Image 1 (cartoon, rainbow, N blue to C red):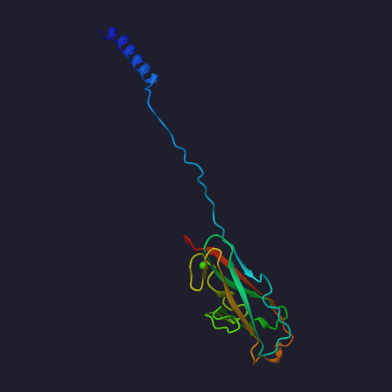
Image 2 (cartoon, rainbow, N blue to C red):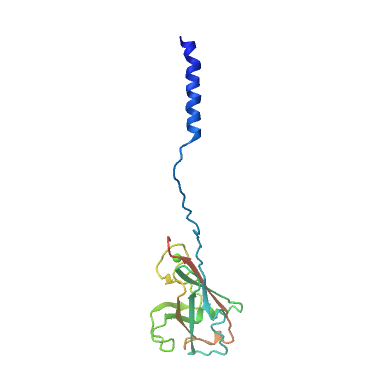
Length: 187
Ligand SMILES: [Ca+2]
């Protein structure tokens, strides 16, 4: 009995498969969602002037020089930045430690020098060259934030203190300030 049924069952299965493959005539449609574009941001900090904010010669004790510096976020992402410094001491006269540097925000203007104080110390800062902020990843005290395409003016004032002694005559130093930026989002 079972042996007789077997070919019949097989026949039915083949018939069923044939019916499925023939398919049903149904209405269908598809929509294409194209033009999905992704562009990454840029983190781009620059200063104006880009070099030689100061070029001071023949300073005498009591002299003070003030310059304005524009810091620009030329990128497309908001950034925060910190400033570090280094200064040479090739003649061993330590002028970099004798000169006094004060950095302020713009305030009324750099001539009035009445903005918020960001740094006061010697030319290259005794503490690891840190002028303000922290180049370590993340937000730290003193880090400054600039929106994309925004800029701000900082006022740099350098003085040779009136009490500077004869040991500093003919001394020279060259200072370098580094502006280090990082994204603020997700950081
Ligand atoms: Ca930081």
